[in-house]
Each structure stands twice: as structure tokens, then as C-alpha cells.
Image (cartoon, rainbow, N blue to C red; front, side, top):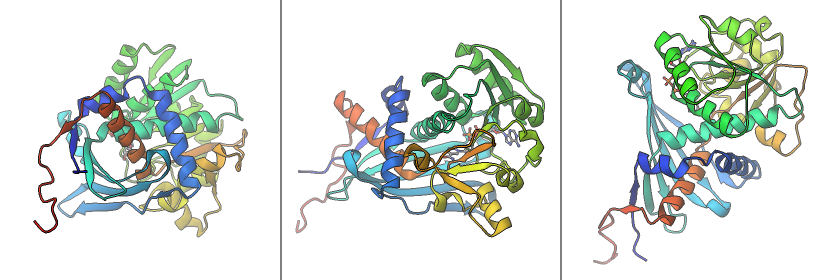
Length: 339
Ligand SMILES: NC(=O)c1ccc[n+]([C@@H]2O[C@H](COP(=O)([O-])OP(=O)(O)OC[C@H]3O[C@@H](n4cnc5c(N)ncnc54)[C@H](O)[C@@H]3O)[C@@H](O)[C@H]2O)c1
């Protein structure tokens, strides 16, 4: 068999994932369970940083997935927050899929959408599973309203969530206005309120989504969480350790999440312990952990490369099934070992 190599564009990725939010949530749940059972290899992400561009980074996430979606690969994702000043998204990415039998890479996919999709699917799954033994939230609030917040809202709405109120807060007024306009175009039911500070949004929401680009905690007062909301702490560095220590905490992977100055990492540094982590999402999915109804619940997902691989392979197989793979002729051109 001659190895082939295909390039899958962002347009093809979006077409393959359109309307598939429930399937994606099931896929993400299966991968969390597989990761929990030891059926993955997911080493630490490698952060490339630049002394002359301190806000920028490019992260490499190598990973290997066993089971029905068996595939190896690498996600290579840039974060350049200054891009948004000109309207360009912050993150850009490619995903390489490797054949687990030969090691040959067989596809390169535009991956900003794959990354946003797996992040949003994970957040929607967590919102559902972490609220099953609590009162289901009816008032959602978004703090940080860029591309990730939009994808999370889309996945919540597509997996059955309806809210009486949607709160919006962003330090950049144009981001808040853009998100509000998206909510209106998406036909969002209920009241939409744009807040001019985080506190009133937090106090008036029972599901709170953090999707900012804050590098260090900017929310310090545990009293704002006195009503015990469910918090999807997707941007990982917004909450002061004191807030986590007063909450029930769930992560995707303990080793991954307690790194890179995330809020859980800061809480570990402050206390010298990890016992503030109540479990992983997989612990909740498998019934090993119970989620309290009378405490604030915080989900901090570091983001696992195996999730990108699973969604990437799903997209690849869907594009191939439709007969739309763009294979690069002669990509591998040295295929006889002795010439
Ligand atoms: N955990 C994961 O798996 C995962 C995956 C993907 C992205 N992320 C994170 O999600 C975050 C959002 O990504 P994005 O692509 O939507 O970025 P973005 O730049 O499009 O949007 C971020 C928004 O946050 C706002 N913001 C910054 N600081 C704020 C603050 N203190 N309070 C309120 N708003 C603030 C900005 O003005 C901006 O509008 C990033 O931090 C990214 O690293 C996490």
C-alpha cells in the first residue's frame, strides 16, 4: 500500500461537523472514558514561547488514541491574542493524523474549528453531567465572549439547553456587542443582558462560562459565588485559588491541569496539596464521584490532545466517506528503501 497524504480545509471541517453536536458530545464522552481506562497516550503539552512576543505561544499536543478511532497525531496550535485587534481570530491550528501501523502521516487538517469544537463539546458535556444531581441551571453567564464562548453557546443550545437569561461580560465592549449580536442571530430565547462588570453577572447566573484570555486571576471574592453556581472554567486562569478552595473541583486530567499556572495549579502551590480536586469528569461519568448540590462546582479542563485526534479522525473519515479527500499527489516520493 502506498501511503497517501490529504489536506482537509477549514471549510471541509465545518461542513463535516455541521449539525453533529450531539454526536460530538458522545464522541468526547467516549474518549474521556477511554483516557480514564488507560486506552490513550497523552504526554504533557509543549509550550513554545517567545521573549520578544510575551503574550504569544504555540503549543504542541502529541497524542495517541486506541480503540475504534485508533490514530496517532499532533495538534500544533498558536495563540496570538493581539490578532483580535484586527478582527483575526486569536488561535490558529493544524492537526496531523498518523497511521498507527506505519507511522506515516496521512492527513493535515485545519484545526482551529476542531479545537473549538472539542472544547465546546467537552464544556456542554460537563454542564450536563455535573448538573444531573443539582438543580439544572436556567441563567447562563459568559465572561470573555470570543470564538470559544460562541462555540460553547452553540453546543449548549444544540444539546438541549434553554435559558431564561443569558448574561454577557467582556472587558472589550466590542466583543460583548459582537457576542450579543451572535446570540440574537442564533435566535436565543429569553432575556439577554450585557453587564459592565463581572460581579453582577456572576451573582445573577447559575451556569458561568469563563472563556477569557486572562493570564492570572482577576476574580477574587468567594462571596460572589454564595449562590453555588456551576462554573465552566475553560480559560483556566480567571479564578483566585481561594475560590477553588471554597468549591468542589473537577478537572479533565489531574496531571495536565495542575500545571502552567492554571488556577488549580495556583491552589496546589498555595496549599501544597491536591485534595481540593474532587475528581475528574470521567470519575463523574463512571459514577465514582458524586457532585454536591450545595456547593459551587468548578470544572477546569486543560484540554487533551486525544480529544482533537478523535474529532480530527471523525472529520477525516466523514470527508473520505463523501469522496471529498484532497490527496496531494506524490507527497511521499521515496518509497523504495533501496531505490
Ligand atoms: N481548556 C481548553 O481546552 C481550551 C481550549 C481552547 C481554548 N481555551 C481558552 O479559551 C479562551 C478563549 O479563547 P478565544 O479563542 O475565545 O479567545 P478570544 O480572544 O476570541 O476571546 C477572549 C475574550 O476574553 C476577553 N477578556 C480578556 N480578559 C478578560 C477579563 N479579565 N474579563 C472579561 N473578558 C476578558 C477578551 O476581550 C476577548 O474578547 C483562551 O484563554 C483559550 O486559551 C481553552
